[in-house]
Image (cartoon, rainbow, N blue to C red; front, side, top):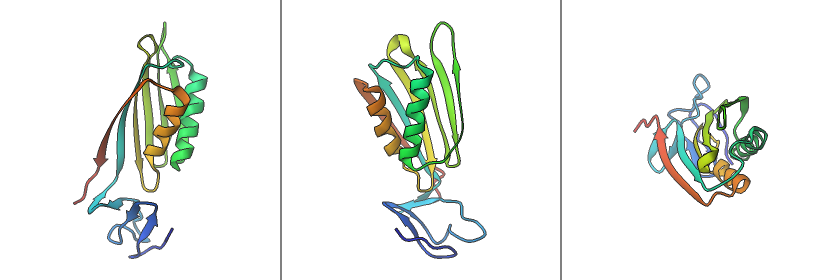
Length: 148
């Protein structure tokens, strides 16, 4: 891994922060990859066919592990329980956020995972897959804040 500031390339795995956006005055952690410069990767994730989607402790533990695996920094987490069932929550990250809504009666959880800089949201998905063992995972990627 290379690290530098003020006009030098910052690299971590496949993610590169370009010299144009890396400076001592403004290190905004935009990503330069495959010819694009963008703010971050936003994953829209649907987990189907699983249990545990009404267990706030299980979900919080899974989210904390997923955030850690992604290399992100957890600032705050909040989970709200609905009656008779279902949970919604958000984990606020230094690199953006992870949010979710669950429908346990349908075995379904919807998540969005938005991370900037060196954090890798795909590593979070792998941890969530291991934690919940869903029958099906649907995933869509959105590059946010594309500069070029």
